[in-house]
Length: 281
Image (cartoon, rainbow, N blue to C red; front, side, top):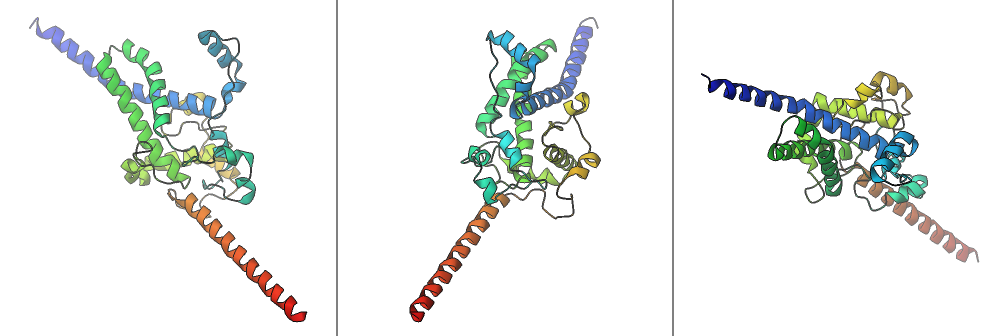
């Protein structure tokens, strides 16, 4: 009986530790997602003097770098309130559009390089927390790797397609189709609305994309009832599928076809006018 006590106690501790690891890792992903999205992608790091001082303290640099956002600010500029992407001539010829030129997913996908950065960020922030919880290296790797994978799976199945971009294949990142079946779920409906509000309100709220939590804690969450009143395209009145993968490519192709037809018609009109001039002469 004396031997059974410690083993029983140890088992209870292990069960409690692993049970707590689930909300802990969710919170860590939510925190990392929020910080990256708000302070890096939206470049709010540049406006926050406290963060810049902290960065200088740890890096021993005299001046903090200026964050550019990696094309995310430009992504907001080309996104309409129905979540489709602009293809009009004025936008396509603009400097912000040039920043996204050649980017297959227009800054919307977790491609392998972004997944690698997220993994590094998760390691740096999660290892101290998991160590305090008593986890060894193996379980830490499993928890961090699993959480990062789950986040990338949700992100890629949600974000590119909702903006009308192509599905993400394995060669580019965690495949978007692996969780595509859940796009009709209430969880994805919530994520879609939450992120739509982020765009409608110009990226000033709803920074969590896949793991809602920190927005609610810090007061940066805005409910649909509030942001829908400010949308320039009444939500639900102009029908658009939630996940029209390939829409952007189709719109570009349609625009190119229309331009080609218009060019051909103008050429025919010019030819006819030339013939009439010859006849008149």
